[in-house]
Length: 102
Image (cartoon, rainbow, N blue to C red):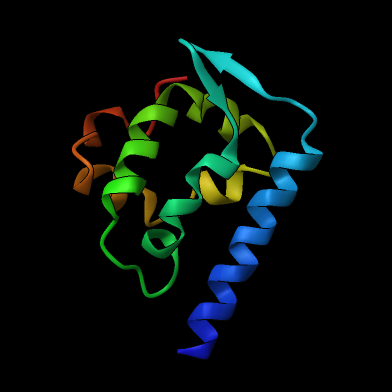
């Protein structure tokens, strides 16, 4: 259990660092694109994954227009290109939108 908590904290710190050091915040369709917005999804993309929360699903749906940009960002790509993301997208009802068509 301690290992899972450590991994989740490490992922949160890494996402925060990506958001701070990427130097770009893009806006698409009135959405502020920032990987830090996906922090509610950390338990769903960690190992072992947990079902995505309602907050995670809201953020995934909100941030979908940003995913192409995240995939091009070397700091954010490891989190967006995570093998658990398609499962999260499916659970959140947006499987049709992932992977994004860039």
